[in-house]
Image (cartoon, rainbow, N blue to C red; front, side, top):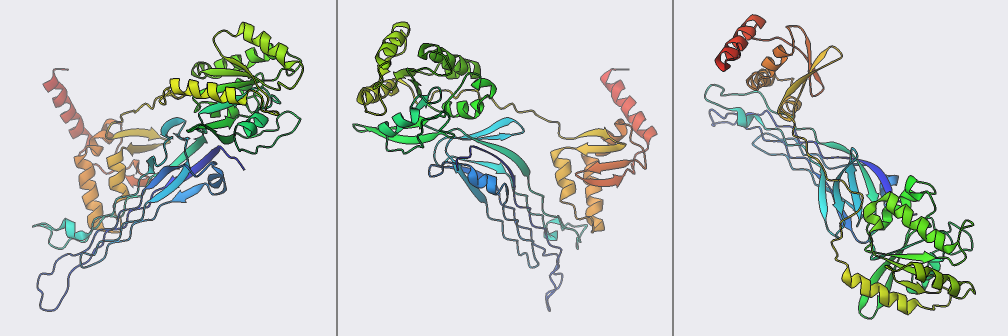
Length: 437
């Protein structure tokens, strides 16, 4: 089953907790702390694998987590780091996070980290000092990133065969290559792109049979968006024309319909080089339609072919090969927007439903790694938060003693060491120095 879209949740491995331990051995005075650090959690990577053709596995299993780090132990034994998790995706997979493109895995072997593992917590051996000889505190392992991603597969091919339903694209693909797509005498036989490799002298050309487009495809009609997306990766388009027309419209009118759909979906897509191939040469009407289209098509080459008999196929391969030599490999991909990076302040305070919520990567990381079962650890965290300016930020937002404060999912009662009068006096002095008052 061909699946070209999937939503997944990936999570790195949590870091292991640091250990609180003391060396106690006979005839070894002043052993001191020897608690080891926790191991680092594994990261999650996506890697492009040329052997894969579908995202079906990610639909069946949408959730993944890397291995967590082991906890530290006594005698300065550090926990083992968790193994990284690498998920293989087909070449041509675009990775989106919250609607933004974060990675485009086109080349085989390309990989990107999508979820970072947590840092291991430090053991009490790190907190020894001249004034704290026997520290009874350690850090918890850092929680890992959890990310929701959308994967979109855009198949990679040299040539895309496009056209209205029943134009004979699948039959022509089977004639050009050894592909065996489903072929029938009714529209919309092909419901997913088919790939085939054609050999022309010493050159390999990858063809993709794109399911039939119809008028309104750019708006999603007839699964249009699902099919148009796969044309973006191709370097050259071969527009297969049915001389009998489609939908009570002539072949010439249908050529204009497909051109309009490409332009409305993406201007870049409409500018891709094209070759027109009037198919079904074995029909009596084909010759007249071929001459008519060739008269009004001055910029694009027009060929007469037959997927059934093979007429004109060598000439089509020769034209495709010649055009591909002229097209650079690094054609810009259509319909992609650059990723905008928004720089956030180090720490800020927001009011949400009666709570004062402190946000910021460093602040949240500190709280997440604090072992609140240890009084010394709580005291240390309060001291660091004050030095980081959290207390001043809360007071400036109107927080008072007894108010609820939330940091990284943990709720605290605000107990400022600085009273509000002292805070206002310091603020006024600061403004006077700046010359604002």
